Length: 126
Image 1: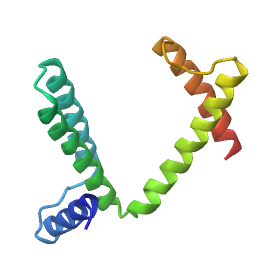
Image 2 (image 1 turned 90 degrees about the vertical axis):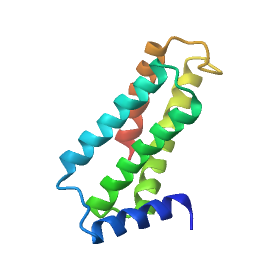
Image 3 (image 1 turned 60 degrees about the vertical axis):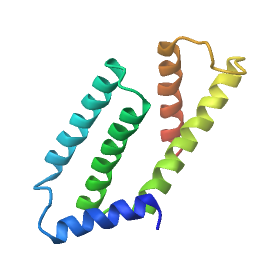
Image 4 (image 1 turned 135 degrees about the vertical axis):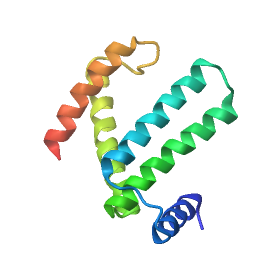
């Protein structure tokens, strides 16, 4: 059993026991709280092990949301892979048209600008 499958199983066991989320808002709040904990861990330079633990907590919150909403995990991951893949392909084409062999070293604002353009291109194709 993969770690993801194990987490899903544990989440479902908790639900069967009555330990369940009341609504999606609560799960989203928990995920946002985990993001805040990740930021604090980085700001306090608490180390990679602690950071990994907090990232794991965020992943758990996301898995909880998927279980709560009854999403198929493989389908959800396949959809995001398709979406991200299309956007990345559009980004590569945009960069090539601008004569950029790599995006390394460019300001982050510029990268976000290109990413927004790529999203528009890819989302209009699909």
